[in-house]
Amino acid sequence: MPEVTTHSRTVPVTGGALDLSWAATTDTGKRREVNQDAVLAEFPLFVVADGMGGHLGGEIASASTVERLRAVVEGGTVSPKNIEKALSRAVKDIVAHPGTTDEGTGTTLTGLYLEAAGDEPHWVTLNIGDSRVYLLRDDDIVQITTDHSVVQELIAAGRLSPEEAENHPYGNVITRAVGPSDSVKPDYLRLEVLDGDRFVICSDGLTKELTDFGIRHFLEANPDPADAVEAMMAAALENGGRDNITIVVLDVTRRAA
Image 1 (cartoon, one colour):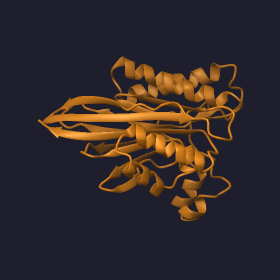
Image 2: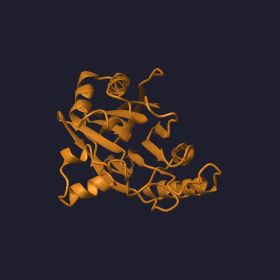
Image 3: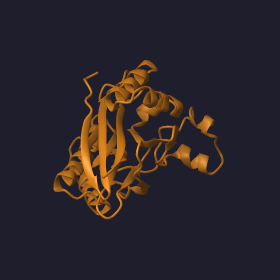
Image 4: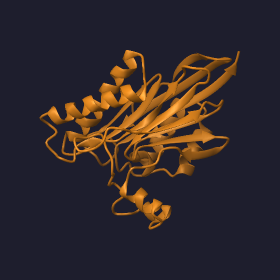
């Protein structure tokens, strides 16, 4: 596993500053030949994309999506409008690429960005598919995003328990993706910015191998983001590494002026 580095950024906000620190890594896992995951962890946008379809299709879809979003970051204004424009361009990239002949080609996209303009900063999560954003706050870990999956729909309808969902045969079937036949409008959720918050953004390669309790354990045992990422990755690989695994850990410290 390549060495993981913790990055940091201080962001002036009304009444003080935010100290952000983060680390990210991705791994092919033990059973896949190709890593179809892609990750972007560049302030103010932190996202994971988990590609699917064909031998190269998923890799192309996730990489195209991340590169289009990287251009949004470099452009200086991360917003729902600019994110959706980038995703529309990514879909055109996917359709036009000769390696994406499979109709099932596409990618999840999950993450969050900091909106620091205005009087009060806030986080905005975005989600298409079944990669996830978790938040550790006050010693409690919560899944912030809602999976777009057949299993999640069954849970929401009361036809399946979360415990039954873990081994369901349709566990990998998602209902929304960034791809030729799907909407490119993510679900968004605004969150307040609180001191001490820790976010985990991950592909389902992590959640197949670690429970929410396991993720919380490794966060609590590793205050530094790079250490937390490396510990979770090592545990996920040790537990089987059945899929590509991508992890971002983002920590928040809020200081008064």
